[in-house]
Length: 296
Length: 296
Image (cartoon, rainbow over all chains, first blue to last red; front, side):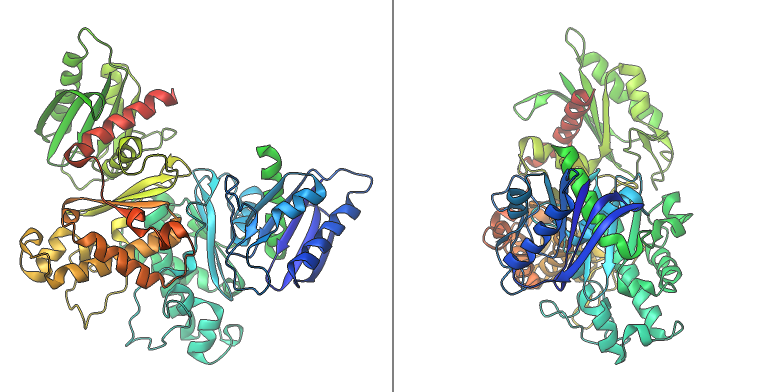
């Protein structure tokens, strides 16, 4: 039996099971201080493990965090703005309490791994998972391994062209103003149009502009990483009318430059929604647990 | 003994040896039709192999090309604009003639692997090599493997912000106008300032603008891939005054967002020139040969 923790900045979801058809128990609680919150997760797994065996735990967490198993601070939440959680050992505490392998990665790498294991990216060695919601974050697999490196990707903050005559909105990123997140996150849409994104009609001009910005970002990521697929999740992407607009705009912007049939002739399968739905977060954590188990 | 082919669009360089201190013979000739050019390379290796053993050959080639060993067209130059070379089997012809393992990748992935083996990126599992010259191209290692995916990276064509009031130059990319290559390649510098880049004084305002565009690109690549280092090569980067300007501008643009000491406190070691100099191309090809040998 595997355990998964979807560790969000506002709530934790913990579950045990082996995959989408087998989620045996789940608990949700508010994210308070690190000691209290992590202990509630540990207690849940201890209860669930009675009479059976817990084989591994996966943690898909808010960040920034340290996902490098060779690092001294592996398993830590690092420089997060979330109060009380800076430089918190998370995976180590769980591992010491439960004595099982612990997988630890960003929420978006967790979601990516879940889609790879059971969802929209099965069998792919190179793909990107981008979530567009309150913020914008990215992860995925490259050469069959989760995207890490110096730290982990922060794709939401890339810079894209911004025509201030066509769109005078200045962007809301406190670090960069009009970076991708500053221009195309849910709060940015609301700020620009003075209306919550979910209240804008499907034919509102907001969506054409949103598709343009996301297509610019996807073009950059495609040229930089050469993924086999891009999965777009998060609250903003529940606006399904965005998918055809983004696909069309990205092909226009690439202008025939990347000569790959998988992209030019099958863009409907190149830019896709996630398949795991509301359970994506906790299933991603389970997939991290499974990977940690097999890495041992 | 290893063989390397630096297969450029205008000239081929072939060499045998084992590395920078041991390049035993080298030949250069013009790139004409594929059959004639590839045969000249094969003949060179056959001559060099007399009385010794050729263990593997590496080819670092112009593209686009197919670097995926599992593909039916592995080893082909694919949709290149270079006349006569479209859909040309290159690695297969060399392999059939010489009966040794053949490594095959883009010129820039070759150069990256050379820097990883003997140069400025030794020991790193995640880094980018970007070449800025007549065009702009990128490659590197991610999770210890050369960057592939759907095809291979085409980082030169990412889109970056362009303030047309500050810089009215429209860009020269035939596909995208003011993409990175359209704005910051050698010909773009010459087009904007009506003077060849190498004739512009080190304190000419061209270099501040160039550093700004390259810093935007490096910021995007850093946020997308989280590399441990970025190596900047190519003719334009012989202007060494660019390095401190790019480093300073990139830190300004990131504005403290990526909290990694390797970047914030050691940017001099994060953005670096290549170490292999004029032999980088053919040494990259040798490194591809070595990797092909060990993959068998």
